[in-house]
Length: 440
Image (cartoon, rainbow, N blue to C red; front, side, top):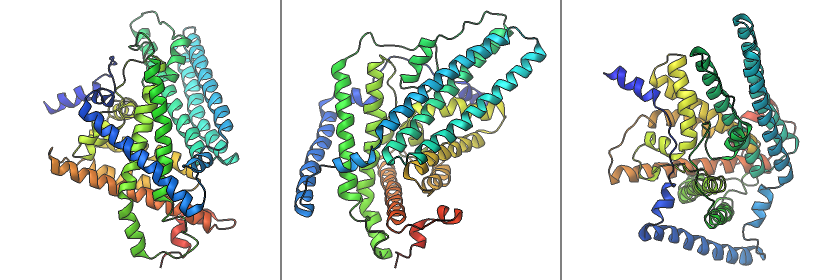
């Protein structure tokens, strides 16, 4: 009985249906809408707070624009790189069709050689594209936000390419076995797939009848406002207490105090990341492409365990990880569910760390440690579904985000304020905040 249930879970298919994002529906309720209004009021309050702080303390008013200008510098390089990503993705589509077409004119032995050669080229493309993204970020010395866009867009499009190739490959193999005629994918379907907010390829998706431009404009406005909000939070609450690291000594008790003070800042940053990426951005692109299935996340805020949180936080990525990592481990390699789950955590942690390392410009694998160690342990701990465990979940989330924000900021300023000339490989991977003698 247990074996049957596991097989059923692994084989479940993702079905796309027309539906709104959860917050879109919740905001229709005036009581829930009030919570949104509360955050808007906080944003306005933070706006005036920042104006007063900048004018009184610095004698200038920048409204967080300075940080945004620095973070999104060299944006023209980002645009050119993104266009190259799209062109290379289209090239993969053309090569895939060539592979499928030539495959029909070969005998079994030639097909096997042809398949292996094409698979080798695909793997080389995967590896080479990672190397290219790294070189672009490094060669042009892209600032943090611009580097994030380059690395994250690279990963997003690579996941889409893998989904397309894997899906259509299985389709071709299955049609060959059943002697059915293979219908090649159309370029318009593939191009549409590159821009819609899903990572799972289908030949068709549920679509809206028309674009609601008012809704799209509002989501774009939300996106821009949340970016400014993010800048306010970082510049007003995160940077001031740590920007002197590497220039003066910090006492351990001072850092502990900052760590606990940053719990609120960490939660703000977490919620802003969620709102910017998973709600505003995804809904904007979903609307302008008429993409019908807007379930990009679920009610992660009601979770009482990290297992539920991981499943509900980012359903777009979670679906891809389930189909192409979890199921592959179990069906292709015959591993247990525990091993497959650990494989998902490790691969997700490595990719997150790769993006963060090249965006920040230094190696400091705290996120990887939290992912692999704490994620593996806490992901298997189920809490009772009551208010007490939800509060515990939220506070632990706040502590986790505070540690990430605090220590990555410390390491950033340690490396910039107390740099090492011509550092060795070991000096590059050892945290600078430990070796700069700035902790008393």
